[in-house]
Length: 325
Image 1 (spheres, rainbow, N blue to C red):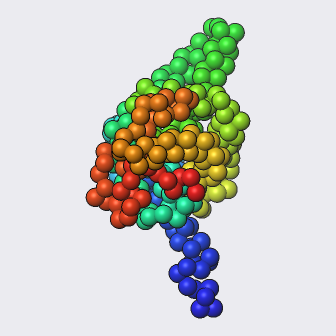
Image 2: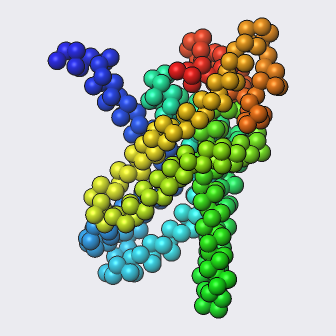
Image 3: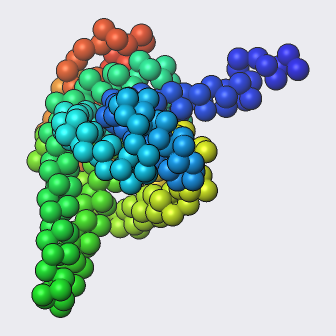
């Protein structure tokens, strides 16, 4: 029993990892999701749960109103929160990219490689990926808004031009799937390499096509997962509130088992070249970068040479040697 409860035992290590996944998922939600989302989630849970009284009570608690009909509650809720939600979502969109890259970075380094501490690693990853991650996430948000308007346009012309709208609808779906495949790789790539925005998108597109099966499995898995959550949300109403705080870390961790073998192929060659050159003169030549990841630089500290947060020789190095374990 004493060995079972030892901090180094498999049981305690497993429990610590589960807690870390939940904690990092919570941090991701706290940074990315609007605070008003909490109210929307609670209201939705109450509605799906078939408890109108609870639904109304949630609304009354938030707004001090006392409507008697569920449809009135919903319309008032959307009317009074839509602008707040829109503004907050646009503001928080800046943080989605850096925090998602930090989420993946933490899942791989802390949970899988057992290096460092979850909170410190997460915010370290957030900091070094903010410069490129912020505009990346904004571009995806703008794409999402554009797709919403496009699909609404398709619905509007459905009656007048059914053939044209059907073709356009299929085309939009294909574009969305292709962008989803890029999305699968772009933030793991950002977490692994110091890279410009243009090269990040270029490399993500190349890898999403070259490793189509991995893109399909992860992207298709995400579609199926969220469809199941939507389809059975009524049956899961009582535990739906915990999903956002578990899913981000769980998805990143599961996806890493497909993504890591791919990234290791590129990181490995670069790390060996970088280590060899560092031993000679501390510089990385331009031709050390793999051709398929043109312009990338593997870096623990974002290539900025800042090792103040690192506590050992590895973290002081510009090379992520732990990736190769």
